[in-house]
Length: 173
Ligand code: IMP
Ligand code: MG
Image (cartoon, rainbow, N blue to C red; front, side, top):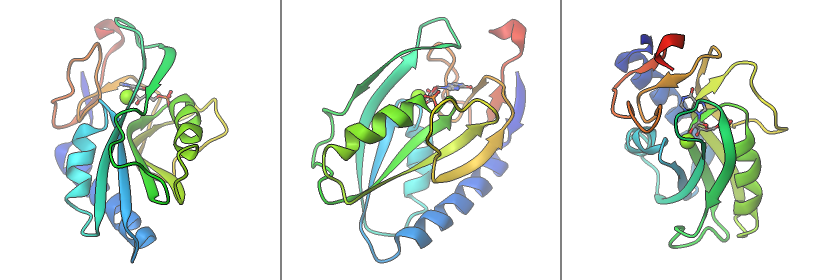
């Protein structure tokens, strides 16, 4: 395992992204929608840096097959949106933008619920992997095409609790 982003670097990048988000939504109420499970660590840190009125909601998206680093079929569950997003400014939060399929499939499902706007923020964007005609609006860090864990990101559901982001070596996968 090789550390790509230290705790200090993560906090600095997230603070920068929070500043951009705050400026963008100045004077409006925000509905943050976290994508479970990977976004929870970012979500917890990010919302505490956003001193604007906001709600927090969650959806679930699962694509990675157990025991694999290759995405399987994507399953999205928006049933857990409690107070709804109709007429609200929605900011989707995910851990990493990789192929883009998650956002590409999730955004239209949120759109169907009638929000005022839908944007997205991710901790990481992996270089050269995008396969969908969509881009996240806010990105804290660009990273090389490596499989990474920590700060919410998992490999077989493990390592989400690491306070830093590390790339797994090929022999660890
Ligand atoms: P996308 O749909 O390909 O953009 O992938 C987004 C989802 O894939 C993320 O929310 C992660 O759950 C997962 N993912 C993609 N790359 C990695 C990685 O390097 N480590 C851990 N999870 C990843
Ligand atoms: Mg995920």
